[in-house]
Amino acid sequence: MADPTIQKGITYAERETGEMKLDLYVPERENPPLVVYVHGGGWIAETRSNIPDPEQYAAEWGCAIASVSYRLQEAPEGAAVEEMYDPANPTPRGTFPDHFVDVKAGIRWLRAHADEYGYDADQIAAWGSSAGGHLALLAGVVDDVTDLGDAFADEVEKTVAPDESGAVQAVVSWYGAADFRLVEDESEGAQESEGLIPLLLGGPQSEHPERWAQASPVTHVTPESPPALLMHGRKDEVVDVEHSHRFFDALEEAGVDAVFYELHDLNHVWVESVEDIESERVAMDLLAADPTHAQSVYEATHVEDGGSPEPLFVDLPPAGPEAVRRFLERTIE
Image 1 (cartoon, one colour):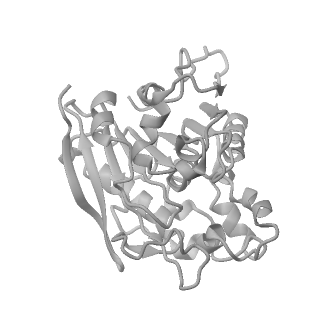
Image 2: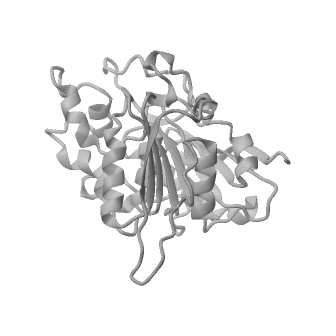
């Protein structure tokens, strides 16, 4: 299996706080589809290098993979997120919806430069983990930044490849946040304005209900939303598994094909305890190491009048790289 062509540090946007960059891995295959990876880190930490082995999976899946940087959340002095904020992180910073604006800008830029780098501009999937899962889901259900909603209408602008589409044809989410309104109960007994989500969305839900709703991917699901593959640990203590349940239910109700793997004994980043979390870079290895993990799989397959069912999977492989490969093969090949 030939190694993919690798190009790192490609600038896709110039922002006031610095250059936004992406890394690109293109397999030896004519016009492969493209997977855009969005890293996790609570919207405030990590970099685009926080990705499960893109060189390996670009080759094995036959997909180009682009890992994109996006502006990370700025944290004012004294904010209750000091343990996550790394002032040495070189990624430019901003405030929401800058994160989403950058992900969509990256998608449009990649679409505009497809011929130059050698992949299919018409077949793009977004894949993200945790905070990146939230941004990937949002990228799937919101065609472009100008459609995000009235609560953010004055804060979004398309300056990168504005004539290109920011839409994607499929979404993969690992333990992504899908409905911020679920967070309300988690803040009981604490100052409502403290914590990462209020920082991200400019204040508590009681003061900004529209922002909390419109930043939630689940509120944007329509029958035109792309198919989705969701994977989430039932014991996730960082992003409750209910996020993925709600998103799957919304897709099913809208008539959108989806598969949802709920892994019974796993926590965030596919560990058994949050104390064991290291990096997304090893997440796929952890998931693939034991394919016998107890898991429930929910599948929504929709049939047009007079048609025949065409499920996303003919059979259901265990959660892991093979399931992702088959989903991408079914949706963006």
